[in-house]
Image (cartoon, rainbow, N blue to C red; front, side):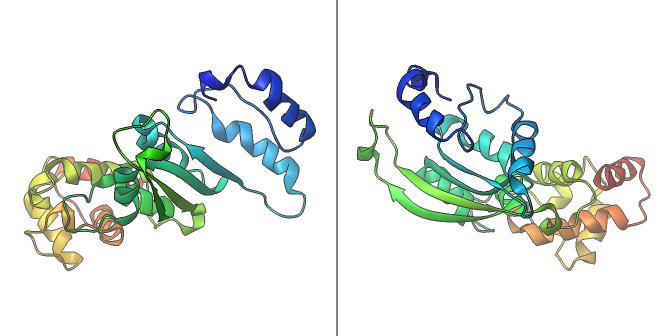
Length: 236
């Protein structure tokens, strides 16, 4: 909870909570440091009975921590079903609408689509905020996927490490941006195996193509020691 709101729970919000003891609880924590899953899962299991229950996130996030919080919560499809957030308009558009082969396309787009189905809802003009910021806001929703609906990769950590490495040089060819993981010839062989030209750049890597590339790299007979280490990272 925002520190500026702490005086309120002692009066009005605490009265509200007393009226909804079973469904409302005020927690004074930093969301980026709080163990959300361990706190919420027992509560949800207690309420589930015969039907699995999920929590929802509805938040007006500080613009400067929005990406950090989104990356923290999106992988929690076992806890949350939906997230509805008020973010900076530019950020919301980038999360929801960035397409491959555009300057706005980044690793976060692969991440967001891996764990959720994002949808840009509407713009909120800056004049609706107090104090008024220099940018507009927007409401965006994320329908979180369950783990069974995630793309099939051996290791989430290894997969996103590959994606982030690929985007270190967004306009470089993948055989160059990934050559610290595998040799250019090995990257070219993996690209050819999934039907991509050897001149392809990270801006062409949709989620599905990223998964195919990771799957191919982890399954191929690899000859160099560094590529063997990379393959093991993708599998673990």
